[in-house]
Length: 87
Image 1 (cartoon, rainbow, N blue to C red):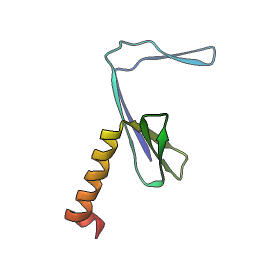
Image 2: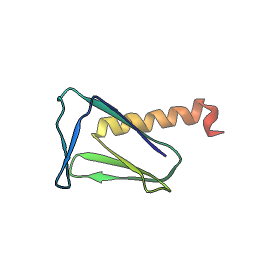
Image 3: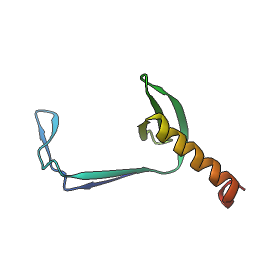
Image 4: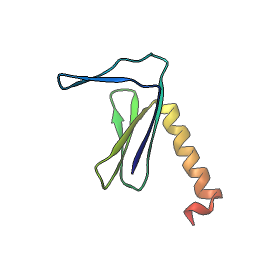
């Protein structure tokens, strides 16, 4: 299941093309639940790409710099040691 929260986004559909026509101060968030696939790989010369998908064909991709990727890895390791989630 993919959820999107689009705050103050305004789109125009014209001649089959979607264009953002609102202010540039809009923000959004996305969440993907019931993930069935995970891919971790290099992305370009200096990024790590995390890709997640569910069985409905929804996907979310995040590109991180190496320090951010290490932080995610450390966070998961800490959860493995301290959280009941991994029991």
